[in-house]
Image (cartoon, rainbow over all chains, first blue to last red; front, side, top):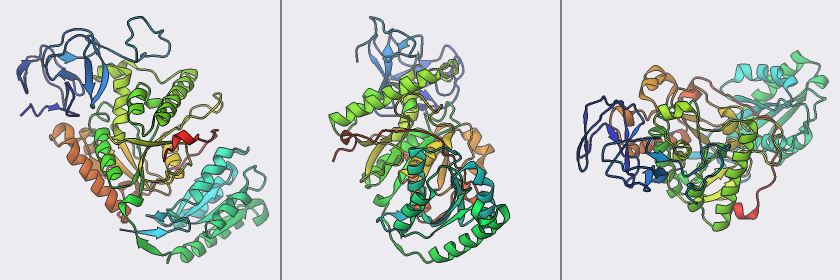
Length: 102
Length: 394
């Protein structure tokens, strides 16, 4: 049984969504064990459901929402510091060689 | 559940008289005609003085919508709208129609009087329209999100998605739209398309939206989105896309195209050709109107910040995504999907609650916005090319 403060939107997701804010230092219960949050996270933010390796897809709603750019520990915040878009984020941005081909 | 049987075989869940102004100059007169008949007559119309094929087609579709039993057309007299063609289409559908031309009737007062009498006569005529058994599979249901916040994508929209999955499974036609908010989802959507050719059409429609919005200079990812926990444009788009559920995509339609059978349909709402008339949809009701033109009997409207709108002709079910907003605006909200966030309700459970309400509203239960008298409506200029054969694979 996972933490009631965490929402799993689709069975294959590798992130949980916070149903509400969780304060720094609080512990959340994941399927694989507990994790402590180093900083406050607001409603709608995501934490890793389990360990995620660099290059792995972040899956939410059962669909990829980007690619991990770093190793993400279970329970760690998943956001712009460790995920990049697989889509050109704005039309003005030129594609770079690092862009994952689709 | 029973519906009003129309001559084209479709069935309505309401039986209203549509009062339509055909140019802004006839708006006041039409509104006054409706005023004493607000329960039976709904105001719709097109404000433009200059001809537009799209507006003509949408008005024809709306005036022959299954929820409409009869029509009063209000023309000033000198506008370009082809009132005779519209009246002919309505007549051919077997519906009573009255055409009033203000310049011929003798002005404001005379036309209001004649229009009110016409509404009374038509309402009497359609009061005993035949009602026949109607199945959930005969429903066309649209969805839209508006006044969104960070909760929409994680509570209300996924719950509507579950409801859509179950409606599609039951044989109903479900419509989702706003390709401009689906940028980044094109490959995921393409993978759900019934055929590879449809997949290509879906990609093309999103690319068209991206180009259109780029010209208008918006549609990108805002800094506030990241504060709310959204990391990428595709994640933001997926929040809106979640309304579509998990079913295969049966077809790509444009406003006014009626789904030929049950299934999940994506509506391409972005005009074809060069950017000509400004924003594709200037407000949420423009999207609702286009889904009604494609036969939607009702719309599932997800809101986070709290939109209060309803619609003329077809009921709107309002789904609150944010539990705090629900407490403030509960008189306006039919469903509290915010329970997913603060009461631990599952997405499935709320999806089921929405489905139950869809069935009750189809059977005649009035939504909150209907009770409050909301009948918002807006139609503006657009232009579309017809869809290609790949858009509706058999």
